[in-house]
Each structure stands twice: as structure tokens, then as C-alpha cells.
Length: 288
Length: 288
Image (cartoon, rainbow over all chains, first blue to last red; front, side, top):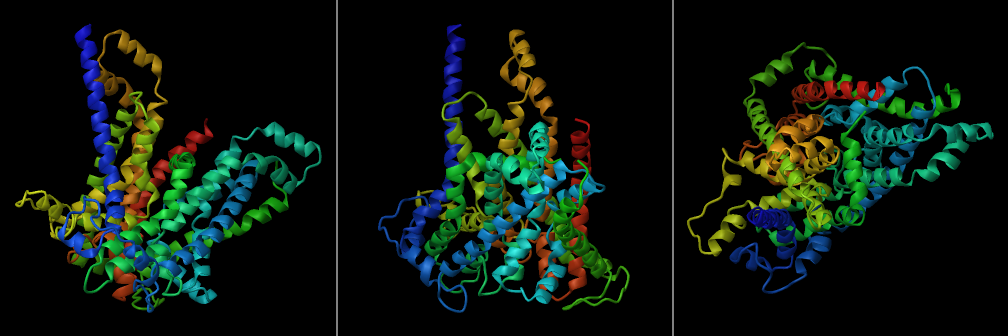
């Protein structure tokens, strides 16, 4: 008995050792990004990536934020960071509202083709967006939205509807029908039921949807790379330009600072509300 | 309740957008793939010429070969590691939430950020190789990212780092839903932990394996951002995937019909993986 208990203690230690090692491995890239974003360039070239800076400098951050050459002017990432906010805020708000409305209608009303429509929306979540790039480019051109943040808002709303509808539909499908029926008896109309009964208890799913959409659209790259220009690049496209199109000296420290700047908004959201982020991931993966 | 005009009216904009911008555009791209479009769309049907050209192109062969290597390694490793992490976390450990958050945070980052961090980490001139040299092991070499034959494995590494936590979360949810009675009974019978996992718990996780496979497979086929940020398809074309091929041929090489054909094949591959899954999930939902 004693020896098996001893074995158990040893295996507990081994378990924590393995977990700790894996945790350090997973934290390593973000550590490297932060540590090296505070080093002067020659220290990175001569030293090793894993060490803390010998000389601390915030210069790479200033450069990445406000002076690095990305577009025609040496503006840093700042205008593109702003573009991403101008893109994300309306795109998230609109797609979430549409999702709530669709979820309400798809769960509380019966009509022909509802299931087919939902299935069509569901599959749209999976399509490789390469299949819509060419006609969407043409459409944005016709609408006069090519190369604008507004155009990106439109695209991200259109291809976000599937997800937001899925989230709200599954949430409202589990909502007690009696509450809605009795509200109807009391004379609540279409919007009355939505505004007074459903929305007040939709807090969690709204948070899940907003976080999901925010993370996805902030991190989106393909649409940004296809449909924007120097005035409307989102942050991901700007970061990629900063890192991959730089000629001459590779300023690793500036690249790391830039990458971290691009990561801050979604990282903050993750740290503050990881629980809801995970719920979104799970809801987005277990369909139907 | 049967739908009156109002809910139908309010649902119709979404229905229309999905119908046009997803399914209409898919039809449009399929149509283009049977034309001889170059820089601009042309509407004269020329049969399967662009598919014939596509299959004759070495760039396509390379892209498909890379996808086969990348997708199989990525799917298998992410599932094995994700399950392993989930089992480690499921041992009633201290600070479970902290470990979970650490393994999952990469999922909140953009693939462009991930690509940037790993690009320099894997770079022999500044990253791990150089770091190990500076620690005294001068003969250590790790230059996969510059090596035509090995660079695709760098894409696998970065993608695994990004997604393992997500697969872990899927399996954790599955593990928490396992029938505890059987586990207890087996324990009373003197079964060892690993036997219980192998014979009782893991066989019950079948649906999680299916979900994880479908999600990872469709992510693999769609992978684009990570390759662009990490290797930009290089060295040479050694890390091209079909997504990179599509973008190159459509937007830089002005062979739009060939690009469209490649997008159609990507969609076909995803439909093969996803449609049976969605169909069975929706049937399950319908029949309780």
C-alpha cells in the first residue's frame, strides 16, 4: 500500500512536470515576441531570442505604431489599427443583431423551407471563401465599395450571418415556450416578444456572439487582402506587409512589437472573458 | 406559430444575401471555371479546358501534395495532442483553469500574428538555431523553414501550436460527459487508469473524434493566412497550398478561370467532408 501511494505521489509530480513544460512551450512564442520587442536590433542579431533584453528600449513599439513604412507614407500600424476598429464595430453589431432576429424567427415561427434555409446558412459557415472572391470583388466594384472599410464591413456581415444565426437559433430553441405563449396571450406582438421576453435573457449568447465575431473579424485576413487598399487595410494585412514586404534590414524587434499590437485586442478579450470565447468555439463546432 | 408576413419579411434580407452572396456566387465561380477568363471574367463557355490546364500544372501538383502532407499531419497530431492534453488536464489537477487558458490562448490570435512569431522563431539566422548556438551547441542546425523539402513541416508546427488547445477543449467537454458508473465499476474490478481510458473512456468519445476531424479537415483545406505570414508560399513554391494557388492564379497571374477551377475543387473537397457531418447532425437534432 505504501509503495503504491509513493508511486502515486511520483506520478503526480510527473504529471505537473509535464503540464508545466507544455505550458512553458505554449507561452514561449508570446514571451519571445514581447521580450524581443524591447531589444535594440543589434542585440537580437548577436544574442539569443530567449533572453530578456540587456538594454530595454521602447523604440520598436513607437516605430511599429507610428513610423514604420507600410503604405506610401511611413505611418506605422496606427491608421490600420483604427481601420480594424472601424471595420469590427459595425460589422459585429450588425451581424449580431441580424443573428438575433433570424434566430428568433427560425425558432418561433413555422414556415415552408425554414429548415432548408437554416441548412443553407449552416453550410455557408464552412465554405472556402476562395469560391466567392471573384464575384464579390466584382460586386464591391459595382457598389462602389471596392477598397473601402465599408466594403469590408459588408463582406464580413454577409459571411458572418451563418454563425450568428446558428448561435441565436440554438439558444432560442432551448427557450421555454410557455413564457413566449403567455406573453402572446397578454397581447405582445412580434417585436414585443423579442424585446421584452427574449432579449432580456439573451445576455450570455449576445456576449458569446459578440466575442466570436469580434475575434474572427479582427483576425480576418483573406477578405482584407483581397478587397482593401492602402487607405483601408485592416491590421492583419498591414502587419503582413510590415513583416513580409520589408526590403533591406529586417527589423525583427519592430515586427514583434507590431505582431503584439495586432494581437492585443483579441488577447484582452480572451483574458477578460475566456469562458465565453470557449463557449463560442464549442457552439461553433457542435452544429445542428 | 405559423409565420405571418412580418417574420418572413424580416428574414428575407438574410435569406437573399445568403442565397446570392453564397450560393449565387458559388454558381458564378463554377460558371467562370468553364470559361476562358483571364484578367477579367469572360462569359463564353469553353468546356473543361481550365480543369485540363489545372491538372497539367506543376504548381497545382505541388499544392495538392503539400495539402496532403499538411492536412494529414495536422489533423492526426492535433487530435492526438488535443486528446493527450485533455486527459492530462482531466486528472483533477490544481490550477486547471490556468493550464486550460494557456493551452487555448493561441486560438484567440490571428494566423498572421502566429505566422510572424514562428517565422522568426524558426528562422535559422535569428531564431531557435541561433539561440542554441549561443548556448554553446555550435553544430546544432534547424533550418527547415529555408529548406524546400522541410518548410511544409514548419507550417504544421505553427498550425498545431495554434489549434491544439481548441481540440483539447472539445475533448475535455467529451471527457466530462463520459458515463462515470462504468468507470467506477472498472476501477472496483482493479483496472488501471490507462486501461480505463483505452477501453472505456476513449471509445465513448467517438462523436468528438468525428467533430474534431471535420473541423480540422475543413480548416486545413482553407488554410491560407498562416502560410502567407509564415513562408509566403516559399521557399520557391514549396509551401503552396490550393488556397495560395487560387489567389496567385486569379489575382497575380491573370488566369481567372484556372483560379476559379481551383476554388471549385476546394469547395468540393470541403463539401465531401462537411456535408455528411452536417446531415447527420441535423438528423440527430430532429430526432432528439
